[in-house]
Length: 478
Image (cartoon, rainbow, N blue to C red):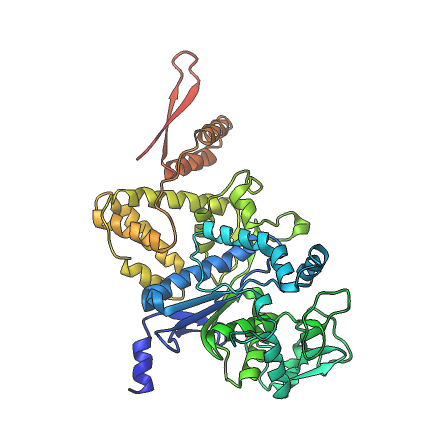
């Protein structure tokens, strides 16, 4: 069978924007029986922030789509947990000096790692196939899987890395086409590691693969002395450990293109002698909060846990599936403005869809082909959601449409449980609307009425028979 025939059979209509080529391409896996996707997960020093939620949700949708297209048993999704961090290491040494370093780090990060698992589950995300910890891949392993120290040794042997003043650095000058992903040339490069540019570097852009640890710093034993890995080598090791030299899709946030992903590519290609590390590189866009860059100094830095469990954002808690839909309403490659208004819009939309799907009763249907077609076009969620709204509009008179809507919602990671109406919240909203009416702010009063109707709450305005004052009653519209 020719390569062309094999590629034709492996292509199932899915097209993805490849950051490496800056074009939308047909997705053809290396092996359609073993489709492989690696996504950079969070550093578990602290609770994951809402920016971390976006790649978790985006690549969960892609994971679901790949499983649908190629079969659940033929897709492997690896999302790592980064527990290699100097702040984590220092805390581990301080709090658990009697334990081996890896065990001490696990103790330190257990709470935050578990919270991340709970958070992304609440966001409707499936568990990845494998979720490795970086600390498990520092030193050579008993099972023979790739590790960081062995990769660094190979880079030195191949002439792509060198020792200098207790460090091992990657020699960017040894790689002719370094910078393909970010489209930067060597003259434009800045240091790709979390250290200052020092005189012992051959090139300013050379980055640390291994750095020495002092006697009072945590570290692992290596051929270059006691130390710890640089930032980027962990993902080269973990992806190779599960996928080999070359795999299909590598994903993450736009902020990781340079230096992290650029340097992953350099390490992996030079260590393995390959033309690519991954065939398709995908990146989700940046996230702002209420029009501003999220930062602790601005007071607009929120964890996923805060949004789910506290009233710190918008004065209320937000269901995980509302956060999920709000994230997906903007195309994954575009910047997103995360706002209370956006969450309210997502919540209202989700209520409409659920009410419409509820009319299907026990009827079942396949995942709509139109939904798969929309998602297959580089995860075109806007087109997909237009289709869902159309099904919702038809569901009252068409049981098949309702059943397809129900199937689509489940496929996308949403539940079918109807949201309960909070009577206290409804009463407060009605009181706010009456204030707007008294102030003759008719447009805003109408907007609130329409929002409540979208939530299944129908208002009825009237007059008190005794006082003659305006009163508003309400009922749940099924």
